[in-house]
Figure 1 (spheres, rainbow, N blue to C red):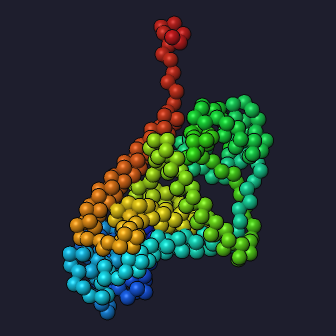
Figure 2: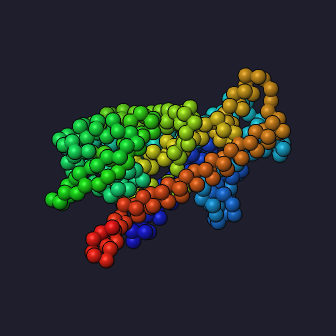
Figure 3: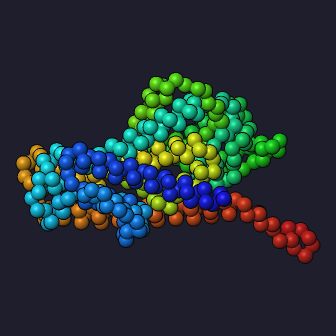
Length: 369
């Protein structure tokens, strides 16, 4: 039953985010009086579909995306019909291109606001008790769990969460000895901190316990909007920092996202909703990147057309899209490789920690060598 619930959670997460994105393009086409030939969820062979009006609605075999096929979207097949995509002025096509990411932000805003309103605003505990451990971070790898109370770090007693956090922050990429209590028993582990995404301070991937207090509806709306802004800003600044420092970006591909969704499915409905909102923000902002084929790259082409006054040609659009396709495939392969590398490293680290210490062999007199 648990496996079925996890699979359904993954399918619903991917399906809803993709559907909402394409729905944005579809509605914008209708708004701008552009004929839509097909509205598809997924790629490849059609599994199920029906035609209503002038549009074919279908579900295809590969659920890794979707598309809205507008009439005349391919310049080589353009007939000059005024309802075709490229027959419309550049600014109308720009509206269609940006409507997909916009709908992802609308979905994220509604989910964030709803989750905050129904669960309440988190109030973090001041006690040095772990409320959550982040997957694949040192704390999770070393075996720390929610509910563990941290007693000391490198021998220094920890009385508050603020003291614990500030101590770890000052020790980036250093080995630390953490003593903690669990179910009345004290234990000690050694782990190595890592740098936070900005590279400024040390982290081990833990957050404090929290309770939730009810908040007014308008405040939840305000906080929902702030969450959209905060995670967008965090994504851009972190990526810019990685590029500036020439470091490998820590990105998640389909395998990593499935892993996160399946884990969230086991931790409660509120966490699933919050993660769904985060993924929707990620899809929205990714599609705004100035990469050809993506909505951001297409939008730049339309803006260039408007500024220069030159119509886009079939040759130019084809060349730009070919470059974009190569870039997207490269990103997909890199993200998938990173997923497997991260899972492999986590598994190896856990195995190393759980392996029993090798005892020295005794000599003939029974004395250890």
